Length: 166
Image: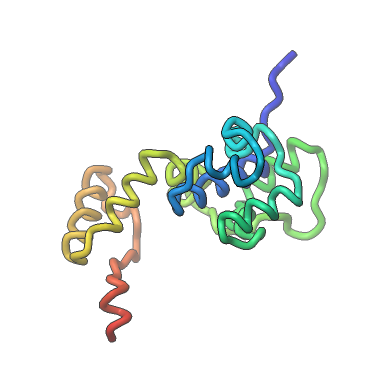
């Protein structure tokens, strides 16, 4: 018997749980403890292997300090289409997707990277750079390493501290 693949929606919600948990510096063990679960169950939720029920998702949102809708933010048309194909159910209207993911640079693999330990460490280290000129040079370096100077068009480095002072 073939192993059942997680629903694309379940995987997306799980990745958002993982992203938020990591952003606030909470371990799987701590989240599990607060939910009355093992860290293995939290892992299964984050991978989308186990579905998160409505009341449990509400509890998670309260613990992580976000609205329930946060877990469905950025559901792409691609993810919605995959879900319809997996379930065989049609969707009235234009589906769950909000059209934010129209190119490869901002697709679901981007969320996967940001949710990974390496992506999280990179983002955390980058945001600790206080000099906006250094941040711009780091960004330019990374873009040059890709060989594609058009990786992120119209991107502006903003120092929020300077914007707040103005």
